[in-house]
Image (cartoon, rainbow over all chains, first blue to last red; front, side, top):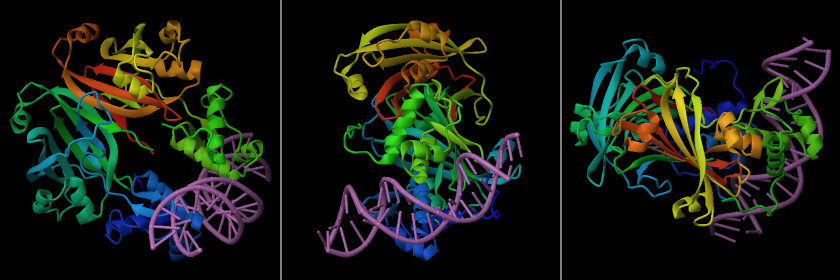
Length: 242
Length: 242
DNA sequence: TAGTGGTCTAGACCACGCT
DNA sequence: GCGTGGTCTAGACCACTAA
């Protein structure tokens, strides 16, 4: 998608990449204070206005946040729910419960033609296939099947998935990759047998099927995720933010 | 939400408001070319950089778009689907069919306490209640129930709704109000009897229930919408854009 | 009071689209 | 070639936060 690698990027784009890299390399951790705009301008040998432009872009991307009078900070990476939450139906601004994660397993598979095209892989390329369950107050509420390109994440370790806060957290911590939603789709489906068993629901019950493609900060598609949600007493909610 | 009316706004915020106003008053129509940044700077008696900041914000809000070497243009207002579309399940980048609209009716109702709070109304305030049906190739695929504050849109005419492209188009054309999504929620539900009849589906079938609050460009919540979608052979899709 | 981000200016040059 | 938006600079002052 972004094949303009060697085309001579604007200074502020180069600065964005360098800042993203430093975050990826854990030189700057979440909630850490960045140097001031003037310091950064000196480091990068550009004007403060150019640094400001780069920072503003990253703030809009959700990578950084600013506090007037205090400074610019690294934002928390999004979790596997990417700003969405499960709350009481009809109530949009409710404070959601924290979901518990249960790692079910990881296996290898081969990308279908369609998936390969979406993730920019060779047809039939190897992929990781991860399954996990989400619980709210002990009750299973969502089942995820996550597909990642094996080549890019070849050192992915099942233990990381078992211990960490989710796939996005693992990619952030171990590969320096921060994801954001690129495309998504919702459907109401009758719950299939296998998913019904895992979710402890009844086969044929109405379930929310959520499909999502996530990309890295350079716009390269990285993750394909399918999610079955039992929304009987819940709603999948997102509040827009500017 | 935005009660900083008289607090002395920055110049670029004042310019944004004036530009939005001119669009609302149809002084500038969709796809129309705006004066150049330098012209606007002269009109508003500010520097070109300040105009640029205002235009950049409006571009990010989806109100304007720029074409290097050509100029800055007014963007089309979003339709009632707000960038979402119904496409073949699993295919995210498919070119969607155009949906046909069928206006079912408009009536008056009173806002529940919750609704009044969300839309910033008195409890029990009067509201418009609009129902409409969406068809794809003749087949009913979605049913909308839209709630608008009556006071703000007291001259709303059913004929406009019958003839126009949807509620958002009517609000744009007749009230100069452009909407954007503020919060949204999805659920899978068993289709209720009344909705099943209107959608020509079977009661109890799995349906996608979509709930949305929309706000104007000043952040004032304006619309509450409930939508039942028959997604049996369709997926409700959105592509993220920057 | 010092240091940070936020706003605003004036001016320069580049990249692109059109004619 | 001209006019547009796109990038970049240098400098000024304001508003907020924290010590």
